[in-house]
Image (cartoon, rainbow, N blue to C red; front, side):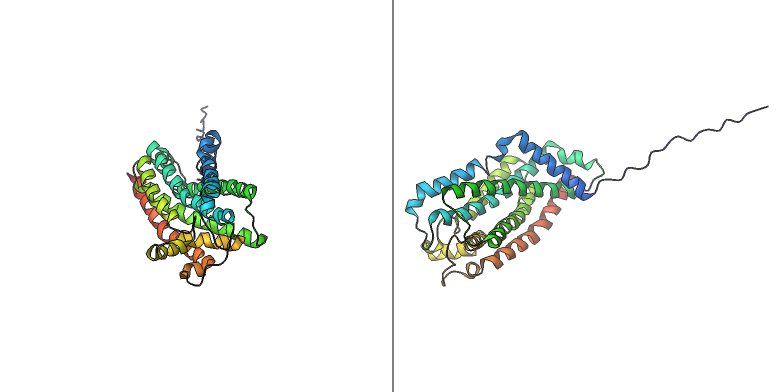
Length: 280
C-alpha cells in the first residue's frame, strides 16, 4: 500500500501596501524635528538671531529712526517676523541640499513610498521651524512693549498671512536646494538674494524716507506688502499714505496674491528640479 504525501504549499505573506503620502510625509516631518531636538543649535537662526535683531534695532537704532504715527518697537516687530519667514527659505534649501548630498534621498527612493513625501515633509517641518521663531519673537516683543491692538481675529489673520507667505517662499528654497550642489553654494546664493529683499522694503524704516526710485522698488516688493498687512492688522502703524504705491494701499489682498503667485511659480519649478536631481 502506497501513501501519497501531499506537498504543502509554502506559506505566503500578504503583500504590504506602501504607506500613503500623508504617513510618509509625517515620518519625514518627525525625522526633521528629531534633528532639532538632538541639535538645538539648529534653532539659533530663528531664536537667538531674531531676538538680537529685535533688540539691536529697537534699542540701538530705534532712537535714530522715526516711524510717523507709530511707536518704533511696534513698527519693527512685524518687519522682523516677515524677515524670519523670508530667511526660512534659505534653511529649507540648505536642509534639502544636505539630504541630497548625504544620500538620504537615495535611500528613500529604494523604499515603496511616494517621492513627493520628501518635499511635503521638508516644507511642513520648515514651516514649523519658522513658526517657533515667530513665537519667540512675539514673546520678546511683548516683553519690550509690542502689542496686538486690533483684536483676536485680526491678530490671527496676520499670523496666518505670515505662514502663507512663508509657505510660498519655502518652495523657492526647495527649488534652489534642488539646483545647487553644495550647502555652501546654497548659503551664499540665498543670503545674497534674501538680504536685499528684506532690507529694500519697509521692514525697518518707512519708505517715505527713501529716494523716489528706491521707494518705488521697495513698495512693490512683496515683503513690504506682507509687512504692511501685519502692521495694519495688529494695529502697529497707520495705513499707508495716499502717495504710497498700490500694493501698500491694499496690503492684505496683495499679500494673499503674492503668496498664491509665488507658490504657483516656484512649486512646479521645485518639483521638476527635485525630480531631475534625484535621478542623477
